[in-house]
Length: 66
Ligand SMILES: [Cu+2]
View 1 (cartoon, helix red, strand yellow):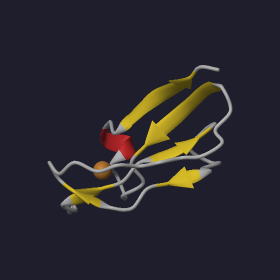
View 2 (cartoon, protein in one colour):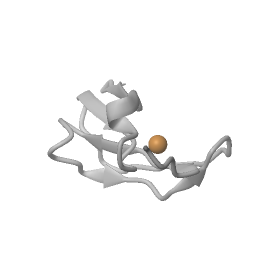
View 3 (cartoon, helix red, strand yellow):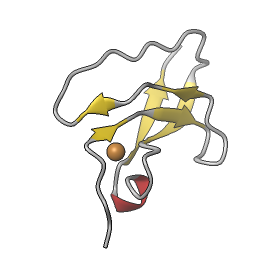
View 4 (tube, protein in one colour):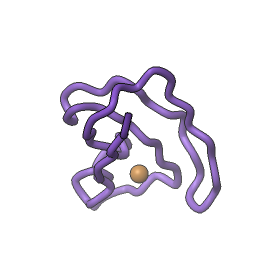
């Protein structure tokens, strides 16, 4: 049985094996600000690193334009 944690985070990287920015944890449904300085233009993968969350769909893409 999967135990769900009530919080999430946001990780950015070229892929899930190479994270370069990790937010703090945020409670479900709560707003948060995650500031990342000096990110190059490009396409990145974003995901939640709480165990099993990315595997259950908390994955997306982030496009940074120049
Ligand atoms: Cu999550």
